[in-house]
Image 1 (cartoon, helix red, strand yellow):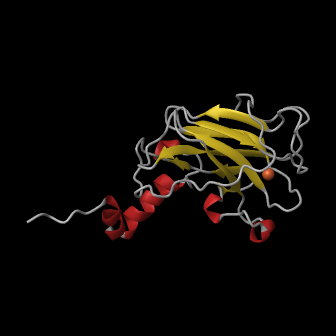
Image 2 (cartoon, rainbow, N blue to C red; image 1 turned 90 degrees about the horizontal axis):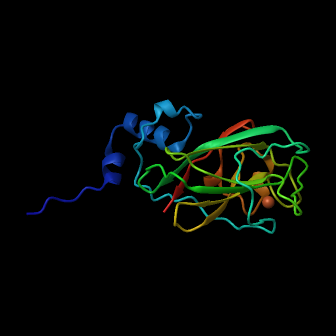
Image 3 (cartoon, rainbow, N blue to C red; image 1 turned 90 degrees about the vertical axis):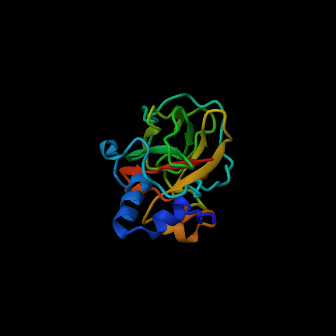
Length: 196
Ligand code: FE
């Protein structure tokens, strides 16, 4: 008597290959910043893949300055831009989401006295962010990574770390999680956060 309910997951899972690819491209962030190709409310899977949490590590400092570029005089390392979006679990862009980044410099050193390579920013009206920084250097025991805290307005803080593809140290780092790999390369990387 009652029609079986079909979830959006089933619809997507049962669809032809082309829509699946389109959905992944829209939500996966491999479009290299080409926002013109992304609908405001992109097609997406059921959104159960909330961004994985990771340990904060010993080097977080609160009260970082608000800035999208961490490049300033004296910062060592090769330039890197990380761009992407913050989405909710229905793949809707989250505007005014807070992203607080901190990382080592190109020599693998954290600034524990000041705020070098530390900064927070808020996503724009389409949930987008853009971080200008340097490629973090390696330090003992860890593969290359960027720390970040993400929080939607009035939401919970998600603490995690972002990783680089084709990094030899990934295989031997016990914290490394392939779900947190950035797309792109060491000059232009992309990552989309999904928050509950
Ligand atoms: Fe670290």
